[in-house]
Image 1 (cartoon, rainbow, N blue to C red):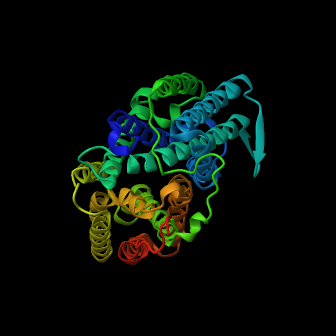
Image 2 (image 1 turned 90 degrees about the vertical axis):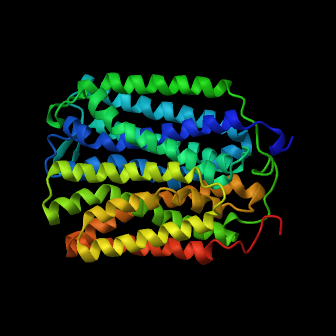
Image 3 (image 1 turned 60 degrees about the vertical axis):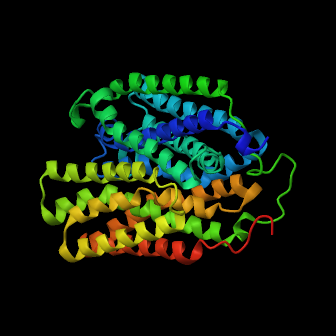
Length: 420
């Protein structure tokens, strides 16, 4: 049965919802850094910031490690089978979170010595949970991205469907901070958070994902012919032989890195160099992510604009705003970059997997390697800021934008097709 004969509206909506779940849990994980620092690391004064950032680092580390796992599972078990397994991994990660809190309460004296500080053993169980959760998010995205690209929904094109999925992802990232502060901790000050308070929220999250797993297992999720290798089928070429994919991985490395650099570091820039008040600084970060949501919603309406044109325009505009922000020393201009970052993921992915046929699922796993830029580039920018201040550290982000522009203009050209 061909794509045009199959009704993909239901599966498309399921993928959009799962994209929301991935965005929600990704941001919940990062938003937990502060509360978990207070709950687990209050005695590690000299290392608490470094150790707390390991929670997010563990999550992103899973992307290059687990992307190939998702690809192999798609080829062996199909899209639905991989989704089910990915959600099982997600349940396991959340169960480790729950176990970390239960163990710490039950064994309060169990600790590991790190640089002279006694770190609760439960914290390391939590880091393992963060890695497993990041792995599950990777596997889900290895399914979601190519499925949204390939499933035929009348009146849409691939980049448009990815923009709709990205909008749902942004809704999840927008809801997550309020969920953490307002629901999990009920507005408590960070210093008042105790390990005992973590057990119920972690248990509830685990049960919710179990319910999602139950629903997905009952879904009818049609396969998409020609996007994956069948079990036993041998792919003759290396996936890295397709230059537009290889360079797309590089482009997504810089995209995710640039996105996180602004989202995570604009607060530090505004506070340390411009001495802005906390309310203004918080508003900046909120508006940056909010503009990404607005941009993705607008992008979902652009059914006739090719992805190469979209990427060329957005990277050019982002570069101009970064230059203006540095020259004028004006962080509000960085906030506006969020509008142009919004549809870059969909544009790069669509260009990177074009004409890959049965290599598409493998390519999707390879593509996830680039997401590690979200861990590396912000760290490099922080080192540059320590060396010469935040204002000109944004040159790193500008370089990333220009490299993405180069990909749009040159690197994304298809020089080899799967059927060639």
